[in-house]
Image (cartoon, rainbow, N blue to C red; front, side):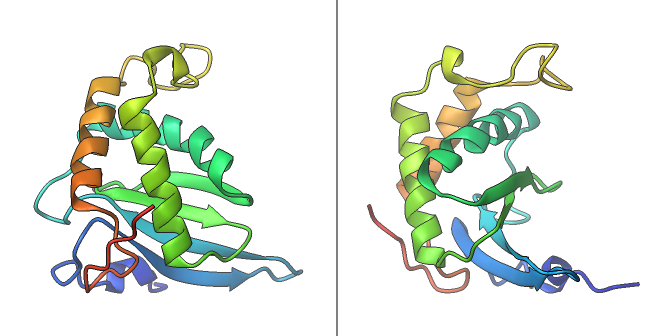
Length: 159
């Protein structure tokens, strides 16, 4: 069985919230992608409830693309502590931490329910399971801690 890099990470040593480069991969016929770990809560201590992380996922899908070019996907971890961020280009973890800080400020301060994309039965596979209240509360919690560009030593990036 192939080793998955994220499963080799010692989750007892990291200090969330942070952004971490997981890996860069080149395709067999060209092109490359970069995979990042955006960890929003401390592993094995707390997790974002499903409705909150679902709404964050929908908001990140749009708002992060307003900040950064080349974002392919943002997928929540099954453990609900953060997201994989897949991009066509490499960013520094400092650039990503700053971009996600700006996005979380917008979520906390500006976003209304009408701004949350794809929340209807036609657009979402579980449209009843959203919570903007939770997404805003988590944005506030994460912003109060700051997002580090280093998973092991807290180096909070400011905007």
